[in-house]
Image (cartoon, helix red, strand yellow):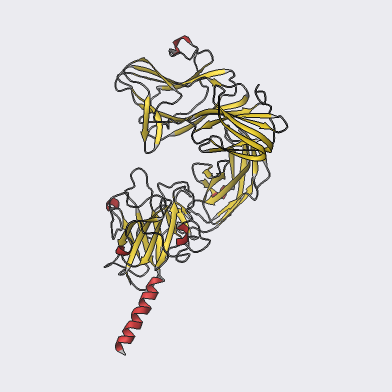
Length: 541
């Protein structure tokens, strides 16, 4: 009888422990090298819990199989206490360390707590819910992973560490500790990491009142965003864009108690009738509100030029060294590609010049680009020329500095600049001009040079038909064309050669396979059954 009672007590203890341990906080992504990664467990019970017989399993979203299993035997969690599995160099509140950095992937991935042993989860073990205690599926601004979501209860969401607009300095955490239920993610927020300590507790309400759907705006227009809130101090804003994803609208949190924000729609805003604004309490994934319906921005609809140096060279640009030993060259760091120049104690003058940019057929054009620099010096300028012959030496042409643009301020922080070039016309060249001497020199990086505008309907090879759509633009693997009745779709290169042709047989929608095309500018020509012809410039990334 005594042995039976002991067995019953053990079963009761195990079941109780199973129901009170939570994956409480995850921080997978930090600034620079991820040297402060951690997973925190929380004991919501009133007595200590042994972790004998528990294992933490990490799942890779790329193949939906395990890539690490960590036995938790010989450890315990105190009542209402924490257990942190963290990077070696964190220096705070760590009970167990799998490594110094890189052991916890950024997502889309999953962390799961099981009753079992690491031996049960060798590398590439498929996702399973057998003996599953708790799980979190997370990402850093990545698409949902349906195969991993089976680890959660039905209807629970994959979490985005970038949801609060600061993925490098925020973690995913239950608010408050141990809330929401196992395999549920609805109580998670993004906030400053709290390994081994109480999580941030965010509560309150927020309601977006304008724009709330149906409004029509123009690129460059000033708009006042308004909202009501209670119990929160700061809010952040996202916008659902024509790229089909949520993007940060404003870089920094805004005082929630003010209730309004004056905002200028970017000059290069894309023409679309499906925009939605989302307002959220800063650090919360659950306290938010969206526009009740979509609104429209009458903006850019034509891609003119784009270059990110992703082909491993200077792409469409020409590098010209006027003096000195240094030259513009291709560079890459952490997956970002760019053109790079450094003075290296020399007297230098170096030009990075676009090909001829045709601004006929469009209006309201903008030039957008990103720059980064180690230490800011006033030695990079951006100019344009309408009389350059494109033959190398820029000295014989007239070059004028752009009236307004912004450059990086240093510390390798990329900064985006958008310049209004709508006053220019005809064929124009743009140049990034670097100078240095033996005393004043540094390293500049330039990338994502992007020119777009609004089709003015005057191009000589097209009759613009309002019912024709060509998207996405820029494109990768395919282009979709819609119209009332399509006869054929042709894709031509810049010299007019047809490189892809699809016979449509009166179909209202045609998907054109273009994945084999090299990066560059193309023209899509749509011929309708009624004889109308529509053309559009598109860009292959």
